[in-house]
Amino acid sequence: QVQLVESGGGVVQAGGSLRLSCAASGRPLSNYALGWFRQAPGKEREFVVAITRTGGTTDHADSVKGRFTISRDNVKNMLYLQMNNLKPEDTAIYYCAAHGLYTTRVLTTVSQYNYWGQGTQVTVSS
Image (tube, rainbow, N blue to C red; front, side, top):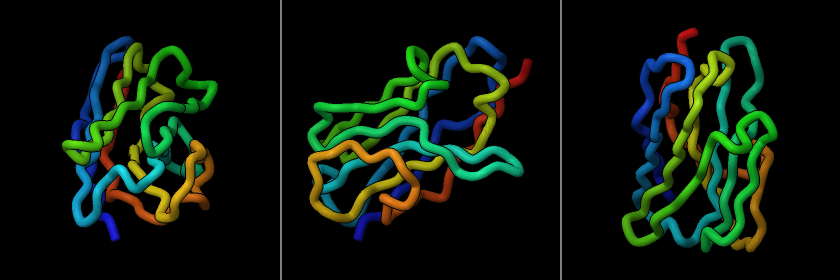
């Protein structure tokens, strides 16, 4: 079982940048396909961006393409989300997630992930 802890959230003005980190413990992160999701008040949790076990393939929600970049460091057991040109509609709690079974695919739905962090708040002011 893997434990995930997010950090790096905060308050930023529109057009600014933030870098979220997700630290894993318990199992090597290289075992898992990973993703970032977010949940705004009153809305369902939604897919943001995901990456395969090796980092060779990524997928992004249309709303963040060209602005958000996911990366992973399997040696350091870390997952990252670089967010640029932030918009007020990006305001949400951001969660990192891991898929618990072997796969070479990039996974984009909430139900495909077994392990979740506690989330980190991102607030973008206009």
